[in-house]
Every structure is written in structure tokens, then in C-alpha cells.
Amino acid sequence: MADPVAELRSAVEAAASSLRDGAEAGTSQPTLERPPKPEFGDYSTNAAMLLAPALGEKPRGTAEKLAEELGRSLGGTVEKVEVAGPGFLNLFLSEDWYRRAAGELAAAGDDPGRPAVREGAVKERINVEFVSANPTGPITAAGGRGAALGDSLARILEFAGHSVTREYYVNDRGGQIDRFGGSIGARMKGEPVPEDGYEGEYVVEIAKSVEQEGISPEDLDAVGRRGIALMLAAAEETLRRYGVVFDTWSSERALHESGAVERALNEAREAGHVYESEGATWLRTTTFGDDKDRVLIRSDGDPTYLLSDMAYHRDKLARGSDRLIDVVGADHHGYVERLRAALAVLGCDPDTLEVAIMQLVHVIEGGERAQMSKRSGDFVTLDELIDDIGADAARFFMVQRSHDTAVDLDLELARKTSNENPVYYVQYAHARIASILRKAGEGAEERAAADFAALPAEPSERALIKRLCELPDEVAEAAARRAPHRLCAYGTEVARDFHAFYRDCQVVGVEGEGVEAARLGLCLLTKRTIARTLGLLGISAPERM
Image (cartoon, rainbow, N blue to C red; front, side, top):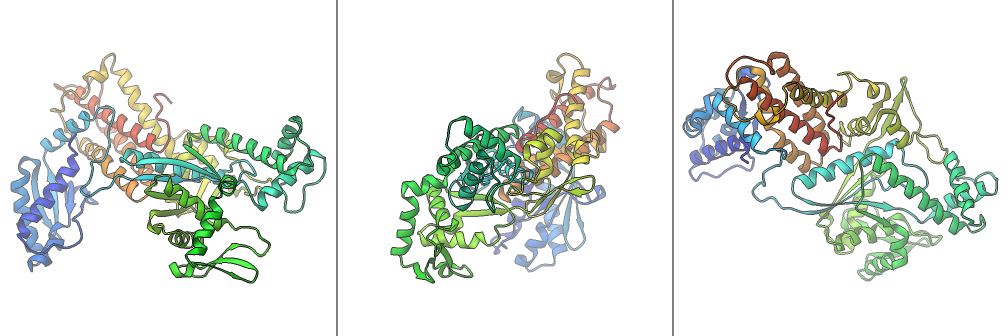
């Protein structure tokens, strides 16, 4: 299917290329954007301002030439091309463009929004590792942000044409696991948990389960392993309720037991990047851009997370990934450079690694923030959040802001069944369209979009068609920028434009030859677009609300 906006962009680029006539081009590509006000046209481009220096001209003079060239090349696509300001070009599209655009959208059927393959684009095998919460307690609401971000990003990348593996890395060894096993064992014996242990009521429940299985509270290794298995089973079920299913669950303990961690250490040592100091084993990461060298094995003989992470990330690459994306919490700011350096030590390309550091989630109830601490047992679990506001609202609120911005999840707002609630607003537009199609009677979808000759009659119809045409670009940008929040904003804009269209335009029973069918078609295109947008965020598109 042709992309109407991409065709306009290509026409602008071709017109600029024809005027360049061998002159050296700049490095920037011309933009094609919607102007801030309708009177400035349907689309605006800075192509003339980028081209003028290469031609040795003033931008407005270049813009006049480019306007003439576009008028010729676009033919019936534009009504006029105006020069504005210092050299912007404003394109006013013809009604024929809108009719053809609607027809091309309809040609996509139930598969709208798939971005075109851009020149030079590379399809990658991408490993997205996310959540990876320590298996010492239930997944918290804060963990739900990582789950929503990682899964939405994986969906978007897959839709954009990449091969994606969703992976959960289980930190199932080390001091926190020992304390977890000790806490379960203490509860099994009816004793207080050890200092720095885990206090939550969930530990008591695990202790009861482990005891019923006949495991001795004195065998803390067996107790800890069984406790981890129970926590992971619970985590998998919680995530399933949230619409998240992992392809791979990797174990830190298994990495150590397989010898992969020791091999990574030996490789780094043989390459001359490991040294001993103050009784500890260090990795010389400063050679590869880190601000200081990092400890691999502490003076007490306990390996650090960095040593395991070296082996783990090399293992992910060895399994065939071209790119690694880690979604991590706000406490990982020092993590990126040291891990990139560790990969370089092992001869891996550090540029294969991307790290999305999420800022905090604040769950707000009655104007107060809930506390988050697994150790104290005082936290909001993701299950509780889903039970309260539903998985759809939880996911939308978690990803509607960029991951590098803190999120205040207002429970009172998320519970509302009104337009104040952003996810309700978008879902309601979808349900409203489903209701319109039902009202139109049997065969409404078959009649819809058969012919768009009666469009567009109203400005709101034009605005809605333009918005629907933007989905492929929005998906491509969300994939390239690792930014699912763009689709939250886009879905809201589609819903807003649809509500304006429905306010201005009668659909069912409207007079005029072909008008009802054309407007039903526009409704159907909007319904498919909203469903696609929500689906890429892991959110349902209800038929009734």
C-alpha cells in the first residue's frame, strides 16, 4: 500500500534534488510537518532553507523556485504552494489527495500503519531484556513500568520489521538470595527474620508452602531455591495478566554453574585488563571510557554483578542478537559505561548495547504517595494495581510519559470512566465507532470505504484523514527513538480528531449520494487505526463500554 505522507515527502525531496543539479547537498533531510494553524496549509517543509546555501541563494528565492517545481510535479495533489516566513513552503492539498489517501488507507484492510522500509534501513535481531526484578518478592507497581515499556517497545520493533526476543534475567544468586532464604527459613521456624531480611507477609505465605512440601528449614539452600521458584511462578502469572509473555528466562546461577562467568573473567585476565588491588579483583574499564576501574570480585571473594553481567551480555550476543536493549531502573545511572567497557574488554562491540533508564513511578492515592520497599513489605504490587484499575489503564499510564520522566500514577484518575481518563478517552472512541457501525445495520462494514468520492466535505474530515495517514511515521519514530509514549499521544490525537468529526458530521442516515458510505468508511479506518495503536501498547480496544 502506498503511504500518502511518504509520497508527499518523496515529491519534496525529488523537487529539491532537481533544483540542486549537482550542487553539494547538506546532511539534513527536509522536514514535512503539519503547521501549527490550518491557515498555514496542510503540510509545511523547510526544504528551501536547507537547499539555499548549496545554491548560494537566499532561502525565499529558492523557495519560489521550489514552489514552482512542486506545483508541476504534484499536479492535482496540491491546490497551491505558498512561500512563508524566511523560506518555508506551505502545501495546501487538494480534495483529490484526501480521497486517494482515504482509499490507500482502506487498501491496508485490517493491517494499518505498517511503516515502509526506509532506504538503508537494517532489520535487526534485537534482544529486549526488561523487568528482571530480583526474585525476592512480588513484582511491584514500579516493576510494572518496566514491563509496560519493554513489552510495548518489543511490539513496536516487531511491527517495524525487526526480530525481537523478550528476555527476563533472574538474579538468583548472591547476598540478597541468601537473605531471602534465611527469611523464609526463619518464618518456617516461627522466628523473626534476620537483620536485613525480608519482612513482608508474602514471606510467611512462601514459608507455609515450602514447609508443606517437606523441605527442612535448616536446608537454607533448598529453601531459597524453592522460594525463588515460587516467586518466579507468581511473577510469570502476574505478567501474563498484564499482557507480557517472555520468550526467554535466563538465570545468573546457571551462568555461574556453566562456567560462562569464569570464562569471561579468564578472557579479560588474559587480555591484560584484570588486576589485583586491596585484596579485590578489578577490571580496567577506564581503558574503554569508564570514569574509574570496577571491582569484579570483592575482597571477601564474592563476585559483583558486573562480572555476571559481562558473561550474560556476551551470552546474549553469542545467541545471535545484533542489538541488546536493557530496560533498567533509576538506580542504574553508573551502569551503562561500565557495562559497555566490560563488553569491549571481551572483544564485543559496545555500540550493540542500549540502556533505557526509567525514572521512578509514584502511585498516588488521595494525594499521597505509596511507599515501595520489598524488604519492609510495604509496597504496592502490580497485581494490586491490576485488580484496582485494570491492566489497560496501568499500562497506558506507565508508558504515556518518556521513560526518562517520572510518572505519577493517580489512582483516582485511572478509575474514572470519563474523558478525563486518557486511556478511557481513546478506548471510548473505538467503542463509539463500533456502536455507530452496529447502528448502521447489517453489512455496514462491507458498505463502508467502498467509495470515498463524497469526501471531504468538512474541515474535520480533512483533519481526521491527515491524522490517520500519520500512523506509519509515528510507528517508525517510536521504533527508532525507543519511545512508545509517542503512540499514547498519537492515539489521544486520533480520538480527539474523531470526536470532532463526529460532532460536525452526521454519519448514519445523512443525505447525499455516497456520503453515508464514505463517512462509515472513515469511521472504520479510524477504528482500525485506534485498535492498531492500542495493540502496539498491549492495550485492548473494546467494542462496547
